[in-house]
Length: 303
Image (cartoon, rainbow, N blue to C red; front, side, top):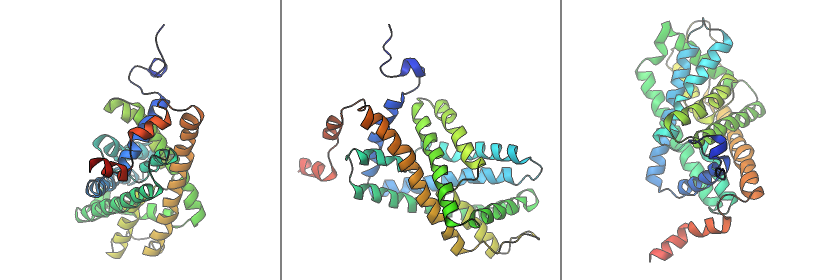
């Protein structure tokens, strides 16, 4: 009889089992939390730009008013997955995906300060990358595509994101990062580029189609809309009074907090409770902790 202890027999020869994904996420969490500042920040900039490129692709779909609502949202969500593919396959540090670092924190493999430091550096790096892409797209006259329908799409999308109250944005942020972190989880099950792409597309398409709030994507959409307003690139008949710097903050902060709750709480913590706390994990926790010393212990051993 074949040994199916790894889950390969049930999930297919090329797939990691959920328990293997849990252990992989924990190990990656430690590595991410202790990455030196320079590569961490630069990889965060790359991720901000990568998600922005997915957002750019999404806007192109929104710029075609002849498409039906459901088809437009489904197609737009599918092409938006370019951003997460660039992050996970190309290699980058994305704030929303890094909410899964909480699994290593629950194991006490990393300290609270290391967790918060990673989130802070990555969030600001993502912001720099997204804003850099905003400037490049503006200089490339991206908003002029399809007889300036791209501009109308950006402005309409941004206004819709700034209008809801903070609680609504917060809840949409939770739902968004539940799906994003599930996309990351499914991508980690794959061993090839095709596997990873297949795993991530539908969860990403679902959150985009539903209009949920991804703080990093909004770092592209909202500043781009504001820049268009400030430079007078507003098609006739559009009410853009809601697109202000204050309303950008009104969206980004609740979306960020919701993303943390959705990714760290509803995905990372839940899977940790199931596969580590409940089932014990593939590697005994004490042994795993002994293999990964704290930063201070590593320095002492090297002296």
